[in-house]
Length: 70
Image (cartoon, rainbow, N blue to C red):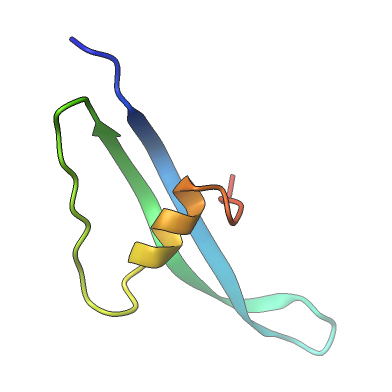
């Protein structure tokens, strides 16, 4: 088996949406929730989905333009 060109495991990102008067997060939006994938040489990968489903956020996380949740 060939080595994966891209391997993503358990990728998640949530954004705080609402805070209380003390600055504590009271509401979060789960943009990407526990995504895993592998891309091997010769394979193609297409990401499709509705507007706002997290496709761009997933790409930004993979490119490390934003930091994933731990």
